[in-house]
Picture (spheres, rainbow, N blue to C red):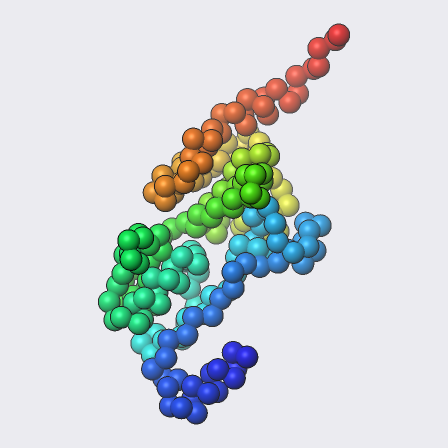
Length: 211
């Protein structure tokens, strides 16, 4: 269907002046980690999705800077109006237009990607994630934390959250997570307490009392 749309634009002489954004709302586990479909897990199979941007002013190329779906709204608004937008109606936009970055007229300021999963209608399985492509930290509000070294463990098979040798890395990315949560007004910020997880982990090897 995308091909038919593109072919029609070319037939009408509109292709060269039309901006096209092609992406998806999420990925699919497709058997990875033993899961199918999507759900309350923040692996790359679900969250790292393709995004293609075609514009008359953008030369073909590839970028690996972190962007997210909320940037699509700001991008489309600028493409349609010819000027940048920081809000839509009375709603502040959390994303920013990709056009200046793609056109090479501005540096992309974002160094990490922050994501929220709000679970079911009871709030179960809510989670937050931050990644810069090198490491990924996942804060599960109703389960254990996760930390993955994406450079050496791209399949996210070794959880380093409770690894003492990765404590400094975990603390750094948790600070990034909290900063992003504050910036975006995350309503669950009060539950971001890594010391609780550490206390539970410190007790894991304690012998059970004899009753």
